[in-house]
Structure formats: structure tokens, C-alpha cells
Image 1 (cartoon, rainbow, N blue to C red):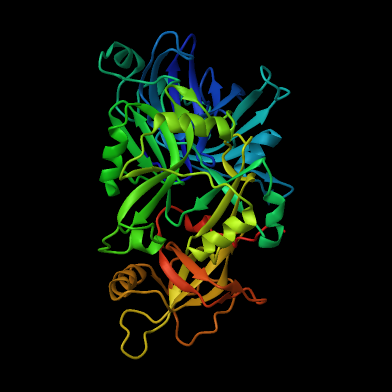
Image 2: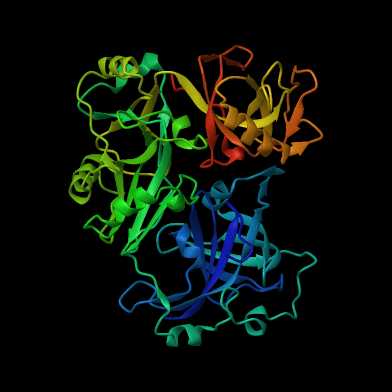
Length: 490
């Protein structure tokens, strides 16, 4: 997409439905909150344009250009009229307001860097916000880009993606189509860390239990012959796991979105995360599937977990590359003790009546046999003795926009990892520390805080440092700025 970056893309789609209008969409937490603007954006700060807040659209829709078939909601031709990136500049009482909170409160201000739209714009709710009355107004902010004489809709009517206009797209017999039945990636549901002392409250018939795997969260999407694998933050995995893709393509059901974990399998049992990402590793990946988000043209997220699991069992034939995650019966304390004795990552408890909602939910709880979490690499130390590459990684987590120091990690590295990771660090070397806290190391090297590592450890100290940390591997499925310290619920 033109000018798109991870996490802050916007698009304006010109849409010849029953009435011509412009659909303004912003990427927020893996979906695209949307407004229908009948007359399109105006560069004149004195002009107030009606904007109707409509349902969130899937992220995959942002590049769609083609036709919506007759009989479908919004039937007609669509072009990508403008696209690029945005910055949320919404404030309240001088303090920044997050994009989702801003939408909920009814006022959003953004700075657009598109091909046609530039500068600041504001959207303000004028209706009640209830279904059928979610009207807003869209206004150009007074900045260097404001220009009352500019008629951007008339001057620039064609797509920034293809150069075509709506008539050309509508007449194209080979134009892409989009229907409500299309399966798409969706923001995944996540489990809350659980305090072991509170684990008994998860006992009872209302909860089901599963093995917690130590792999890569993955949503699998299939539409016809096309199969795609996506990470939890919508990064592609398709090319990395060809055997899993082939197994999904061979299923008799040709329209679905599945949720599961890609896990390393050594021929006898499932291995840890490091075996999955280790350079030159010999373990193969198996897709362990535990949920169903979409099936045969139907969004299944509003069904209960029990209902979704029943459909999942009918839709997926397990095999060497695909496994269905089994429910575990018994007392959760006994199950956890058995899991830890077998060297498992831990357990997940899920409420049987829960629907599938994006983000962390109290209806899903995780309990690990040993502590581990993602941390951001912000530097390294010099190697000692016979070690090459680096001595230890300096890691941390975010509190707001501050990177807090969590300690150094000096174990868990193979010779190949020391070499390849050192090369990655050198490419990101900084002159100054990215950490908000003092780092008590002699002559450290600093790195741009972009790499995320999975770190196992025994516990946090009172000072907020890791005790006995061990490197497990790099994670490509999580943005560094989203890494925070996980705190179990009491």
C-alpha cells in the first residue's frame, strides 16, 4: 500500500455504492475504524463535511480495489483514492489520548501523510453515538496545508494504487471482488497471566483446560486455493511454513480463519520456542489449532467457545502438520502439577461460554510452569574468555514511552546465535543508552530497541531485575514498543 507502515496506516476508498462517497479508515489495534464521508475531505477549514461512523473493517480490506457484488452490503465499485500513514494528535487537557479512547469519546485529531491528503484533520461526533445516529463532522485544521481554493476530489479523481477511475474498475471483468463471506485475519484473543495462588478459582464445570505451547501464535486464513499464515500482529508467516500451508490447502473446507500456535516438533514431543527459531534447526513446525474465527462465510466469534470447538472438530482433519489442541479433564491444580512434571510450558484455562474478543480477556487465563516473557534488547556487553560476538544482552520493557532496564542475559546462546545476533546488534548500534534507568555495566554497547527476545527466568527481584535469565530466541511476531512487564492477576 502506498506509504503504509506497520500500525499507523490510513486509507480513503472512493466507493460507488447506492450513492458515491469516500470511506475514511484508520488502522487501530489490528482493525480499521471507518467513516463514510459523502462529499469527501475538504481542504477548506471553514467547510464541515458530514462523516458517518460505520462498523470497523478488517485490516486486509485497506488495499481492496475492485467490485462488491450485487446483493452484498455496499455493492458497487471501489478504488483506493488515497493512502498513507497517520499520526494521532488528539489531546485532552494537554495530555495525549489514545486512538481508540478518542473514538469512544467522540473526538479525533490526526495528521495525515498521504498522496493527496496532508496535514491535520479533525473528526467530531455530533450524533448520540447509538446505532443509526453515529454522525460526525470532518474539518481541515488550520495549518500550512489548508487551501480553500483546492478541490482535491475534482483535481485528483483516480486511484493512487492503480491509476484507474471508478468507471474503469466497474467495467473490468477481472476486477477483484470482496464479499462479507471473505475470511480475513482478525486481532487475536489473548490470555491474562494468572497468579498460581488464585488458580483454584478457575476450577469447576465452567472452565476448560488446554496445554500451553511455547511457539508462535498464528492465524491461518483460507479463501479458495489461497492460504495465508499471519502472526498475532499481522506479519506474514506463509513462506516460512510451507508444509503447514500445504496441509491447510488440502482440507476439504476452503473458507476459514483458524487460531493456533506454530510449535517445533522433534519427532517425539513438542520442543521449546528456541527450537522453532534457531538458525539451522532440525525441528519441523506443527500447527496446533485451538480456535475457529470464521467458517464458510460466517463470522464465528459471537459463538461460545464450546460451540466453536465443536465446529472446529468438524472442519479440520488432524495430521502430521495439523493438530487439534485437546481439552484436559481434571482438577486444574493436578493438571498443572502434571504439566510441569512433563516439562510443558504450562496451562491455559478458558471459560466455556466465552465469545472470541480481540485483546486480553479475563475469560482466558494462562499459568506458566516457569517464568518467561518477551523483552526488548537495548544493548550488549563485550565477550569474555573464549566467547565470541557478545557477552550478555541488556534488556528491558516499556512503561509508557520509557524503556525500563530489566537486567542482562548471558546464557542460552549457541555459537551460531552469538554470531548472527551480534551482526543484528551492530546494524542497530547507538551512541547513547535507550534505557530510562542507569545500566550498571562497564563500557556497554547500545542498540536501537527494535529486537524482541523471549527470555526465561526464575523470578523478578524487588528492584525489578530478572533473576537467572536465559535467552530462548528472537520473536518476530511482536512490536518492541508493545512489550510491557507481565504481572499476574492476584
